[in-house]
Length: 241
Image (cartoon, rainbow, N blue to C red; front, side):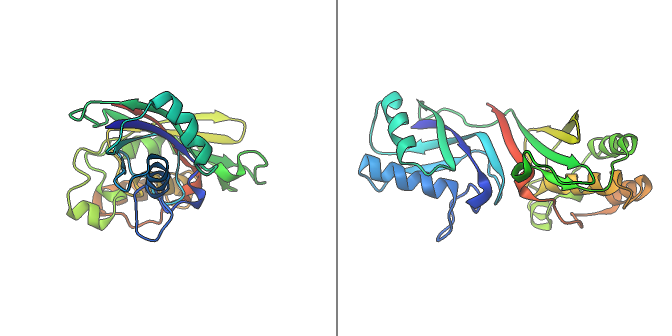
């Protein structure tokens, strides 16, 4: 068994997890591994699933195959044959009983807050034209991160299947000119959870909803009732095992 660290641009992928007849990161990797190893039994599975359009600098996957190979030589070879929107950063051989359970994950969501759109990082950020109230933004973050449950930013299916149990999030905001870089730290995130949080934060910071309304939403919503923000501004940046 092998551990892969994978970087990819999610723009043209239907997510990381393999789906029949759709282009996914797992599907592309398995196809290339099978061709290079002359086998049909390669199995790639990520420990952190990313949605359609979400990017990664460091997603971790395990590769199970029926052939051994020199990881250093093979790394150069496989990256030559992979498409330009996906790259394996590192390959290492691990024991079959090795645990791939993350202690925590870090995502970054990039927002450009300005009357005019960005010229740099346009494909990797969300443009918000209306000016943020920074004090309100920080109060909104405190409201959301203080909640005992994150059901209000989860899908109905995830809530019903209790996938939100244990979900806690810490949010740190850094600023550079008009860019707001939101850092999300947590042990696990369910589908659309970060983008649903971003939707509520942006609506509150721009005055579309009030802090009192936000408090009501987080305490009364049994599942998410807002639409997620765009996926292109979300990047998986770190996984700690």
